[in-house]
Image 1 (spheres, rainbow, N blue to C red):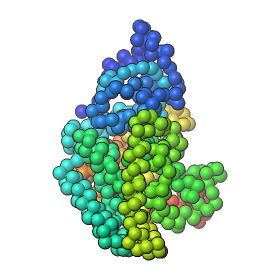
Image 2: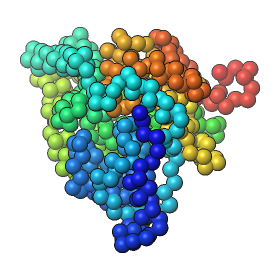
Image 3: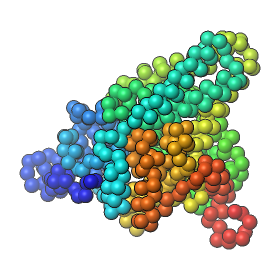
Image 4: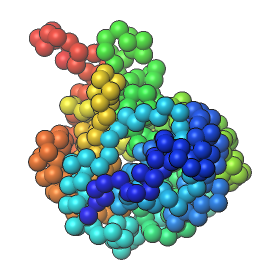
Length: 464
């Protein structure tokens, strides 16, 4: 059963921090600070501040990645079995000034969803299955073999294309589960497989800062880094007409956005943020990344990036000389990987009838939003088991966003249950039987978002 009420620990914390009935409460009350003033060794959960300096986290040191931030939503989405009592293991040191949550947890919808899904995937079994590890190591072996040929025998157009697809497979099937802590119960396994992000031109630490924030605030127009990462070239957010983020050229984005996405690899590999481990999108929404955990890992990020550039970019020129041929080989690899990764990602939260403003009720009337409901209605699912094997389960975005620390291998098994519970509670569940239908819906959405036709009061205007 999923937790149904607050634990005595959280109630005690609130009593201490609010009533100030003893010495401990007095100490806490003296340490009231705004969120922006959190130290690098502190995190905030439910408005309370905890010191994680000496905390032995069962899931490894990943928790320190978010030092200095409010991790309320991240904590609850990654620990679906936890009640508030687990927070007791961290040292309470203060509270946040004027903390007001946007999202609501432990709703009837969330409780029933967890109860039904956990009948299928029991606690402790939600990690990678034998099938998952077979798939993961197959893709790892494939990339190692292809890269060996690339380095020793030289590049070619067919090899460049296949390596690009192979690197995308690593991003979808290996590093994604691992960096969600879903591949294994053992932190070191997730940590090692998570480096797959670095060996396909990305960076695991930047990815986690950005991607976990995306998961926590999916389609939130000011807190989801993915929602505005493409601006001002094109928009994912369906801004109202006249919004300052709109540009005239966006009316054509349904035609050109895929072309722009083909530069994803280039923007990732040569992104200076890997040098500082300070992801601009995450930083823009207020995530602080200057804690000791990230600072101490900059040297590793830089070293692995140098190795990646040598293997994938320099070696073709060593074989073919300074000419256009190796450059085009590298570009073929880049486009293949870019379109497979960013193209698939764009389907997940951009489609007709998607919820693009999940916190509107909170913004307009102060009513908190069910986080579970928002995750379902901002995501889509397509295909089935085969699509899951190719995309690392990312075809089942609804299931993934509800249970991000569950291995993708389980999503085909829980999908019917998730859909049934959604229908029972009147929550929109968008399912496409084929990737092509999801793709066409995305194209239409991008066109309408670009020209503002979703806001047109006259449906016969011809702008749709």
